[in-house]
Structure formats: structure tokens, C-alpha cells
Image 1: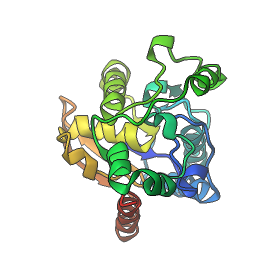
Image 2: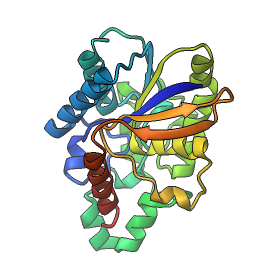
Image 3: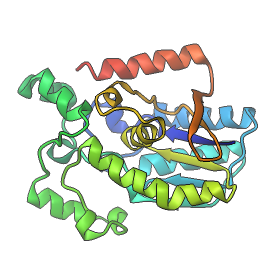
Length: 247
């Protein structure tokens, strides 16, 4: 048996402002910084030790990773940065307020864009796409892989492929793994590990800044999973995430 930890980044500035974030490279809010510190403190208190971290190329996940490792006394640990672990790309919705979009397009349409498995939001405009493609943060993304929008299914495809090609070999080499990423890329991994159905995955909510442990058998099939920390507080955070998706 082995254990890995999944961690959604702390609250970002655009989480706080209720905006579609996606691949926009925004930083953590003050609350997000505190969430990352708390996650690190919990992991240290529970005597967790890592020797390899996988994270995305986006600032909010990287900053969360660095804060957690600093709190654990593991600064300088090996980190692998992968665009495949980026948040889902929300296309032309990125930067827009979710509540305002619900008023404009209707709550049901926005729920479909946010929570359905196979539906993509409207594509990013050509000018915005060119601007995105020129950003230094995305230099590792092959041109043919650069999205203009994504469904959760698209996110699952890239995240699971990366899991199989990069993360699985590390686990099999007995590396102690932390995956510090985003709500949708972690939902993608959870869907794959737990074999969650396409409809059922819409109900899975992962709160920001709470370590999620997966215990895996020798075939890397999940035995069980659970959150670390105060369980009542975690339940409230999960309920808060659910309420966000009601629009």
C-alpha cells in the first residue's frame, strides 16, 4: 500500500471575486495564503514527508506548493511543473463574474458550463488566444495542445495521461508524492481513481487548501480516501463549495 496527497491551491483572488479563472495566472488571496499555511501545518503535524511534488505551471498552485513546503521545513524539495495539471480552461468566460453570467445566460446554462462533463464553454476570441499563447508561463505547452476552451472531459484526458506517464512511475519508485493543483484537474484524477461516472462527477467538490489523502493498493487502485484536519470545518468548506455551484 502507498499514500499520496492531493491538494487544491488556496483561495485565489478570482475565487474571492467569483470570477471564472481557468488558465488566467492569478495569485492567492490573503485567505488563500493562510489556507496554504494551514495545510502545511497540518501535514507537518501529521508527520507527512514528501520527496517529490507535482504541480501546475500556474502561480496560485505554485505559491501554494512553496508555502506548504516552507511550513513543513521541506523548502528546496524537487518540484515538477506540468501544464497538464492546470485548471480547466474556461474559454471566453475567463475573467467574467459567474453571477453576472448567470443573469445574462440563465443559471442553468452557467451550471452546464461549470459542472457538466462534456460541454465546453464558448471559445476564447482569436486576439485573446494569441495573447495567451505568447505568455511565458505557457512556453511548455505544445502549440497543438494549447486550448481555447475545455470541458471537464478534456481536462481529464490531459491530467490522466500525465498521471499514467509521469506520476505512476514516481509512485512505483517509492517516491512520496504530493500533487498540488486545481479543483478541476484534481477532480479529473479523482474521477479516474475512483471510477466516478460522467454524471456523478458533477457532485464532487474539493475545497481549497485541504489535504486529501488517497491510500492505494499495489496496483494503485484506491483503498480509501480522506481529508486531513478538523472534519467539521472541512464539512463546512465542502458545503460552501457546493453553494458556489448553485449560482
